[in-house]
Length: 412
View 1 (cartoon, rainbow, N blue to C red):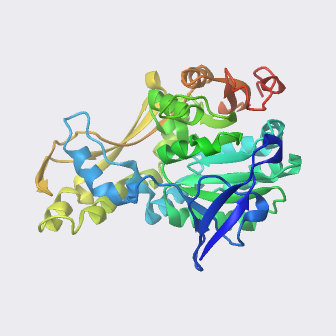
View 2: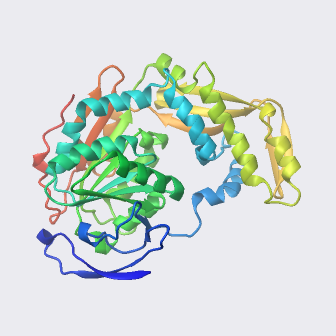
View 3: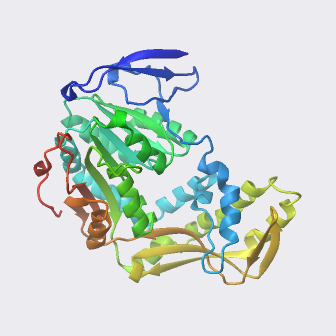
């Protein structure tokens, strides 16, 4: 069905009502519009998802091309897409990693939130945000904690948008989030798209009046190289096309800063094998993605990507503050897939997944390039896991955000 609603921007912004058309289905509620809706305008639904994809093609649907491209690069530059380990089975294997005692990041971030989430929530509330956007929302287990605390401080409606590329995961997580929380002021919904899609959607002129706060947990930003992270932050603080400064109230960023090589190596190569099983699952996932895509290639795919021909290797690079996960052929592998010749040498490292461990000065450097600065910081002292409250060094004159309400950098 199609419904046309009168959607008002927040009254203090002095904007006139605009017309918004919403298309829904009985099974799911999927939206595509130019602006967010106030609470009273939402149809009743367990899941509310805005499809902001710039293309109908999902990154998950293009993995076969990414696999071939990564494996045909020159030696030393070969990669496999990290999305291979995030299918349903991969997420189950990752749950085993999270449950391991040696894997500190998930546990330590949870402890940091338990101790300081109220301060983080009050900081966000002080900035009188209209939109709260979480990047790479995943299962939203920690999100529930943050939103519940934030809701206590609010006196006006806030729209929470969870950005993710996986529609099924987004739907499941929103249902679970609604079950975990009893929110009065916050309405959770989803944004279906990539980081680039999210940045472009927020940069649309229709969105300019809405103050937004962004949240990125799980140290996911450090999966990027430092220069890539700066560029990504810039796309959310400035219009990706024009460079116009966005109506950004603040950015809550959680980053692992541990530099203890012993702890890191144990966490990312768990002795009981959970990490290896998860990383090697990329081979099974790649076989599944490539099967049926070429002329009788399946046997060749199975031979080149057979589990017994590969091993896992992890390495901590202290000079880069980064841990890298590799898959390594145990013998020379040569073959043709989809008309492309694959030549893999024994012992050649194929990069799969990386995780940065950024010290506080590194975080400050990364965020300064897109014109942001650390205004507050909270740390897990033992592991140096940090939560950083960022704000623009120069604010928009119409943002309505008093930058001085956030005190000078605070260490906790």
